[in-house]
Amino acid sequence: LMDDPADKAANTLVGRFYCLDTGRWDAGVPLLALGTDAGLAKVADLELSEPAAAEQQAAIGDAWYDLGKKVSGSDRVALWARAQHWFEQAVKGLGAVQQTRVKTLMAEIDKTLPLTVSDYDNLTAAQWDKLKGTLIAVEAKVDRSSSGITIKSGEKFRVVPHPGDRGRFLLRVGKDEPQDAGILTGTGVLWVEPVRIITGTGRNRKIEPRTGVIRFKVVPVSDDD
Image (tube, rainbow, N blue to C red):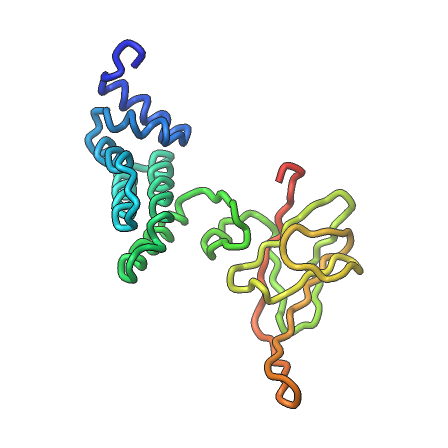
């Protein structure tokens, strides 16, 4: 490329390296657009048009998704990760039918991609399933349950509720005050206290029975997290 920036084969080779191997799509997409691979060049051209409309953004996601279906291994992971990038931008602006279709594709992609978490408070069920940690399940009807985990001095853990169980419980480490799910503070036994469901006021005030199982994962936290 230094000798001949227009060399199509070189543009494809270096563009694939930037995009599929290192994730530097900003550097690689312009090169793919000049390359010999017609499929990659077509989608790269779409990206370079910088579309703002949700339908166009979804179309780019579709194109990367379709290319990913034709390959396997790390190439599929990279192409589908790029598809997910565009679907995430598009999905909120789509109509109901298209939104459902795109969400279905996003769920399929979620099962393939390695988990990278930037927002523990909004994990999907599929992402939570892939999260590595100690799984805890306790009966919601019990006022307080031991998680079976004791936190020692110097240890840090994060509690990540199953998406269906967010807000259904508090945590107590040893004899400390209750705390919400997240990075825990304190040392001692980790206790789980289901939140009471209270409806009505005055004479109509009722405490509803709690049912089901509360699920969460306990994930070690490093000093870098």
